[in-house]
Length: 460
Ligand SMILES: [Zn+2]
Ligand SMILES: [Zn+2]
Image (cartoon, rainbow, N blue to C red; front, side, top):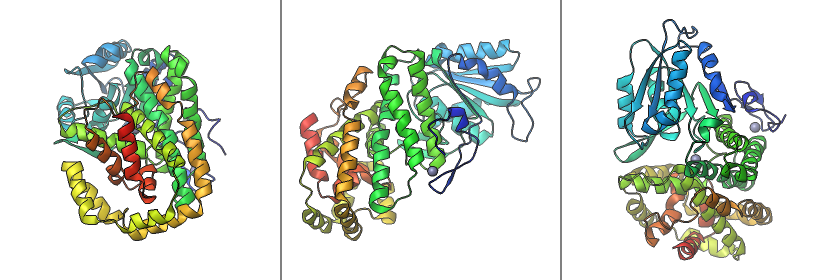
């Protein structure tokens, strides 16, 4: 069995017994991506199964079309009118804001707009509106569709909603959208920066897949080569189509949108975000967290991931040039000072420090005993590791150039953080999640501080 020859609709709603030993499944009822994809919307609605088991009935069931000031203009109005013309009972809710982020207060506003007889929510937008609707729809037990206005992030097929509450991002378990629609005519109206952000989120998968494979090779973590190949195949297709994205060609936009949805499918297959998120995402999450602490929104998620991918590329390249000194690494591991680490974590993570510290209590990622064992594995497999890292450096060699063409960022300069803050982001981003990745490898080899210094000196 292989996934590569399958269309995106063949990848959902069926079980795939896989060579990795697991059976993969992704439950999303309907996906339509491409030219005139929006035309499929009425048909999806007429066949929509509602909680309780009956099919959507246009005579009694009502629809709420959700958008914000921008996405209303871009497509919300069109969707509303189209559904009216099709004879559906439909109301509209437009968030009166030009720029929105996934904050709990907006979820409350949407919740207050729900009404008796409402059976389906159709949201027209991208990341934030999708996250807000997913949360509200899940708790109200109402099916929801997303009509994408920008190919800007890989959360369209996600089943969790990260929402900001009291300056902290909290990730809630929810359910996937019942339908995802990516009409290229709508996607083509997205600002270039949002398309670049989508590419950034996609291009980071080179690092994510490499790190997953690396952890499998070194420590035997579960890994599915077929899902990894599917992700890389899809990423490569986007990378090859960057000139088409710049010209907003329908085919290139379709590939990007399909890849963004497909990453969600890959995550469902594995049950966690391992195929999609690694050190580049840990850095991005840390940057996002720091912005939220300051009450700012910062850059788009995918823009951050793209930028962080450039940094990890550079760190891997530098790491390959270094002399891998295992005795020195062992000395470094033994010198770990928990008290000092906790102090630095409190300083760097502020409000989120408790969570990072309690994760450490469970995982103990820097405990000398654990690190020493890992160093043994790295030393034993250093030749294979070198080959693997040379490949990922090669794969991401063109990343910065590609991102720049789509208004992406390739340097931490301009984020408003000083050298010390960027240095600490690189040193402690690994402690945000329990996931073996580039930054932990550098720590294990005793060179993380040196590589962080290298980045700070090279970029700031
Ligand atoms: Zn598998
Ligand atoms: Zn992402």
